[in-house]
Length: 419
Image 1 (spheres, rainbow, N blue to C red):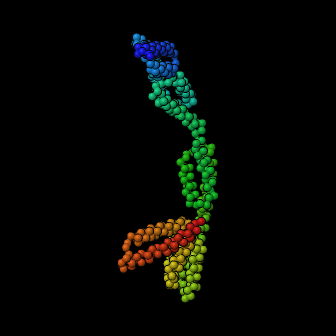
Image 2: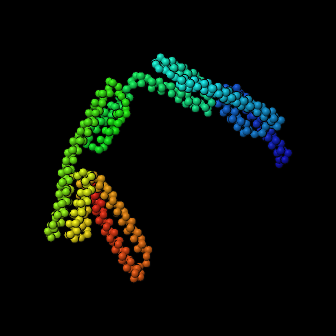
Image 3: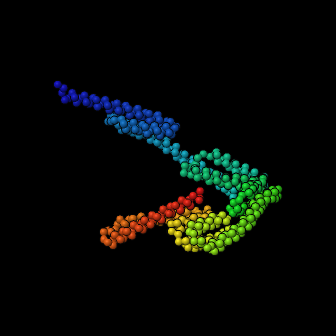
């Protein structure tokens, strides 16, 4: 049986062995750190010292008598590295500050030169350009400025140089060809006028050509060599369009005058019509007026509304004498209205407007029908008066459904006319 003194002795030997081993490991780390301090690469120093510090803390206890000496040696070795790193960045900051001051001085030179430039000829511009290029070369030879200022100072310097070179370019562009910009602009106006001269979209094209003429006046002169040549071609294109428009409108006015006479005569004819008493024949005769009205052509927009009102009033009076059923009369009125809208100068726009109106009426009826159906479900109709109210509600809903069916047909007819 092993005695307690024997076990205690064995444990002490193992512990002493570990302490000596750890002491040797930390001595080796100190040597590595001291060797690392001889390196010149700051990145290598930064990475290495952190790595060795982590390893140092991972090594366990050392021989007590040697701990303080090891600790001080390791601390001194790492401090040497951190001092070296600190000095490096301190030197860089100082260098960056110096570079910033140098760049600021070059920026001020360019700014002053640009602000005072009064060059009037190529020789003077060359002298100024040589000075700016010399400043730019000096800038390239300077290293980075401080991190927070480097981008800012570069943008300011670049902008200052751009001001100079933009001014120089503008000057020489003007000297080389002072009329080129105007000539190109007027050539573009001429090209557009030529494209428009055969257009038959009279209103839009006339407005566009008038804007082109105003732009032509505002563009300035294209120079003695090109101005008259461009102007003669531009005026020729404009004149061709406006002459064609004038001829067309004169012909259109003559046609509309004739159409107005036809419509006037037709209204008088309807107003003076005597019904035969044969209901079928009379309806067919009135329907024939609708076709004749639509085929009688368009009149001036200023006359259209007056003719339309008189035409519908005359027809309504005749239809009223026939005592037609409501649905049949509404169908006839709607057909007459569509035919009348089609014959208007802006027929498509009027039909589109009518289609939107019918659509809104459908939406209003749908909303009213939903409200009545909701109300119908909310009330108690068990009493005698309640039953009468229920019947009244149902009749109104039925009428709304018939109105909706009629408007759906009308809306489809209007959409068909727009296709």
